[in-house]
Image (cartoon, rainbow, N blue to C red; front, top):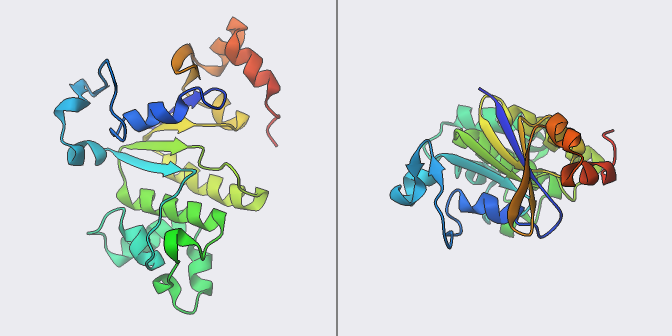
Length: 215
């Protein structure tokens, strides 16, 4: 089943911190977080992080080949599975254009790639991992229109048939969410569907009026 949760709020409201709490990249100072009724403190980091795939605006890539960077998502994957992930991430044409194909060296943290290519490689890695929960943290920010289009297409494939928790800035993404969680000052101040939150005429409604309309 496909379920989309969106976390939104102004810069500094705590959105990224909230996402980072789930795989325990940061530890809570108080309270508990439950995953399917289990306190994540009672899970090993390995078993917990197997449940998540992350695509963020800050992509981390190794100074290695494109193939090995994708394979990091699931080291036991076959070449066919890696190829399928690369194609689903809209990166296959780029691979085909390289003299060394997917054995092309991408440089330190992918510095031989464009921003859009780095994001799509990160998406290919997440597709290959095939985790049940997807974390997206501003995954299309700071991209030109063409790169954003290709990345958005790849993200739509990735989000199919899984739970996605999305830190979003695009109104079209927010409107389509099953549940919107609005944060301010590190706290959840509103939550509900787009229609429910608009009807409240509160913080979300005021924010949404300031967002550019979808193209």
